[in-house]
Image (tube, rainbow, N blue to C red; front, side, top):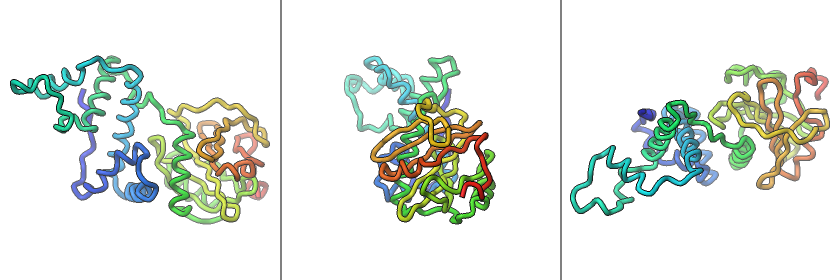
Length: 280
């Protein structure tokens, strides 16, 4: 099986050098912000990020068991032929024949072959909680910049609906002490989703809205004040609540000190949806 990689745009050489670090969350916050802004308008680099993410997850799925000794040497021999005499016993990690890109592609191909072609590249799902908190931290470093700012929940829903492929529900005007003030488009978990920003003075809470299909979600372990069942987590000084409504997932993220205030009236269940005037 051949793993297809997106064609690289020569004009994006500098950006593409940062994409692996972006996928691995290894960039400094300001560099991650710059890459995210570039991805908004660059289909070539966005496709590259998607491919790297897919293959990295396949690599992690393979890392459960160690590879047999000499496996990569045998793969190299099959790919590039035998080495010249005198070089067979030498490891040359710096030669560059097996770049990260090639290694990830080979790993994904091996995984597929081992499963008779039915292995899912995305079997190792990233954590919804981790991805949301990481984005929240980067978003804060950007200064809470939104794509569309307004306190009109209906206008926010209409703006988002024109830009995503799933049905956007009525947007809750308030979450506890926080009032909605803007929306932005995000690229997380291999999907395009909506990030709703709620403000209370200088404090912020974000509700990430996305399709549930293909996501490994944590089991609900708490009933929120409005009766919704959610999974509540605490990570890196942030509180996170995850709940579902039909085929959608809602992820509320706030700094730990603000989390309880955002949970005062939370949830957006089909049976509990009200008009915007009732929720204000």
